[in-house]
Length: 94
Image (tube, rainbow, N blue to C red; front, side, top):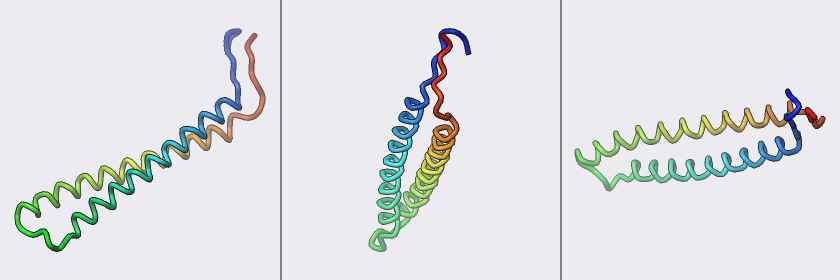
């Protein structure tokens, strides 16, 4: 830390909370997309080789969506850790 450094723990906590809320909202949207893909894949009226090819490809997308949600959950956990670790003391290098 130098004389130009400034750390406001309340601002950091607020930023962490905002980022976590955005990631949770993003996870809700991803889950809705996953549900739509599952519903499409489980549609018994759609049959044939072309549908089978699409189903295989969509399963890959489902895995990507799950991975995105897992990454968001990891980021949320990291934001919670940072928010809990930053403390309450304002640090001003001046």
